[in-house]
Image (cartoon, rainbow, N blue to C red; front, side):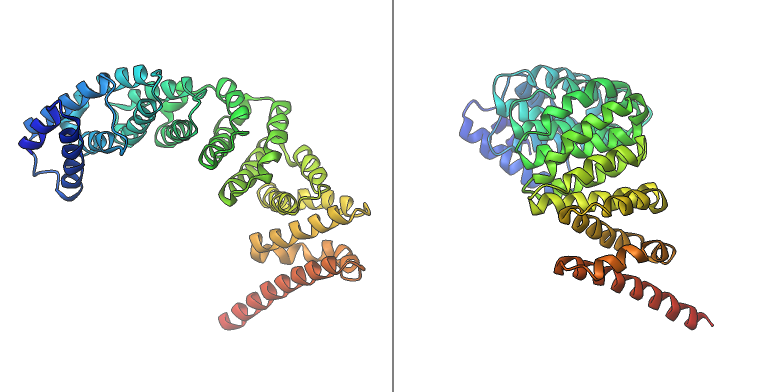
Length: 362
C-alpha cells in the first residue's frame, strides 16, 4: 500500500493510473481493518490534492478509490467533508466534462454515509449544490446529478431544505425533453417524488401543465422511462384529483401511435387504482359511449390492466361494467371482443380462486 501511495504521487501518469487501478482492486478485496488509519489519511490527502488540482482518469478508478476510502473509513474521512464539498462545488463549474462528471459521482457516492445526526446538515449543502447544476450540458453528468438529488431526498428530510419545489420543478420540465434514457428516467422519478412529498406547494394548474409535458414521455423508446412516467401520472392524480388528468389521457388515446396508446391505457389504470376505481370508472363509461374506436379500445385496455392490478376487488366492479362489457363483446371490431374476453377471463379467475380458498377454509 505504501508503494502504491508513492506511485500515485509520481509525476509519471502511466505509473499513476496503474497504481490507481491496482489500489481499487485491493480495496475491493480487502477488509476495512487491513489498512492503518495513518495510511488512509495519507491517501485521502493526496487524493484531495489531486482532486482540487483538476486531476481525472478516464476509467474512473480515482473517484472510485476516493469513495471507497471515504465510506469504509468514515471515522478518519469525516474531517475532510468540508474540503470535499468545497472542491466539488468548484469542480462542477469546470470546463472539462470528465472533471464535472467525477465530482457529481463523488458526492452521490458518499451521500448515504452522511445520514447521521452529526453530518445530516451536509446533505442539505450537497442537495443545494446539485440543484444549482441542473443546467448541466453533458447528459451522463446530468443523469448523475439528478440521481444524487433523488438519493439525498430519500436518505434524509434535511435535503428538502436545499430543494424548493417552485424552483426545481420548472427546471425539470425542459430536462424531460432530453433524449438520454438515464436523464429522462431520473427526471421522471424525481418529479414523481417531489409531487408526492411537495405537491401541495404547486397549484393544480401548474401540475396540469407538467402532466401535459409528461405525455411526450409515452413516446420514449425506453420501457423503464415509460413505466416511471406512468407511476408519476398516478402520483400527480393523487395530489390534484383524477378528473383533469383523465381529460388529457383520454384525448391522448386518439393518437395513431400504438405504443403511446398502450402507455396511456396503463396510466389510466394506475390512476384508477390509486384514486379508487369507483371515482374514475363513471368517467370511463361515459367516454366509452363516444363512437371512437381508439378511445373505446384504450378504455378496454385500461380496464384489463386495472383488473390485473386490483385482483379480488374486481368482484365489486363487475356489475357496474356489465353493460360496457356486453357492448364490447358484441362489437364488430375483433380487438374489442378479444379485450372484453380477457377482462371476463380475469374476473372468472379471481372469483374461482376466491371460491376455492373459501371451500378450503370450510
